[in-house]
Image 1 (spheres, helix red, strand yellow):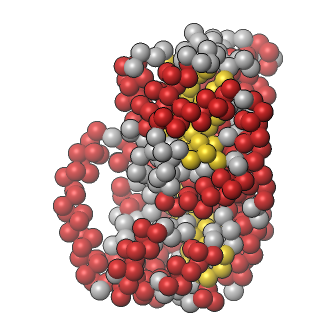
Image 2 (cartoon, helix red, strand yellow):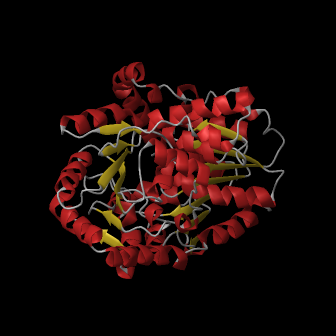
Image 3 (cartoon, one colour):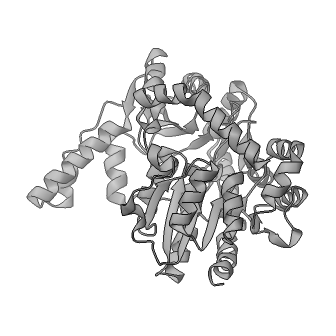
Length: 453
């Protein structure tokens, strides 16, 4: 069966090669890490790992990468001599890992394609003591290679959506063997654990540790940084802000239509839109302008700040004189957040937060990021792996699920018109975060047991 799987992968690569070659020609993110995906990892990324105890962390993209940072930090504090190699699939995930985990990650790579000859070569070169995957990446060949090499494969923050469970069960004769190669499955909920057991993992190797995303340390602007951003974007304390984070195609139109209607009720209202994928920044800018809104791009302000910082360093000026060169733009209706890694900071100034990927069939993103700042959280019906998180928020009164733009308008209007209600919802969202902390410590203890063997 593994041979058949490998053949299918190679056929798929050949069929999709023209598409990806075209994408690589016009989109930089598709060119990043191509050689590493085929197992050709530069010697400079591996030379410091040889003859050391290595832990290999793998996270698919942004959400999983952010979630794993606290675990990396605590692990490195306990084992400072251990080496951590970290892999991602996406360019944005790679960028976040580089930005947030530089002090703990010894080597950052792109995850190799799951061809047997590729992963076998990579595992032999890295020789990890433990392999850790965050949440939901199940790759048959690498799990098989790790098992054969007696390297424990640990899943943390494990979750299995209903859709994935049905697919795995459909091919249970194959996936039962795959899941059997997992040494330990640390899952978010008992329901996830029951699914894992049904798919072939021994009950003794399944532990419900909770969701490590509740332990994420919320990003905090320094007062000077916040002042620069607020002044540059011409945001005042009198403004009400709707932040639409991690949006996808089809959602920006809904957000802007709701914003247009709300502006008739709340004159000081502004909206900040943060598309999930950087390659869509220009597309979203054209959409905003096409709908008749004035716009400011965050990257313009950042460039001004960096220029001012350089001038400060050169002239050794005081902080006050450093802030003076930041020029405020005209007060635009829409701000396009076209930078990476700043969304959480911006949630801190929101009046209302909408989490994208939920009004179109994407499956959602981390609903907790606004909750860390006591903000009311609005999201759509497409939640996949975030259903449990949404249920907890709604039970506490801190999350608002909507079906469409009309419900979005009504719920947002209610929050904007009633400050007491809005604060109540935001506090309820934060209470869910506080009540569910501690999963990272549980995962760390189990990881220590495997690493110390």
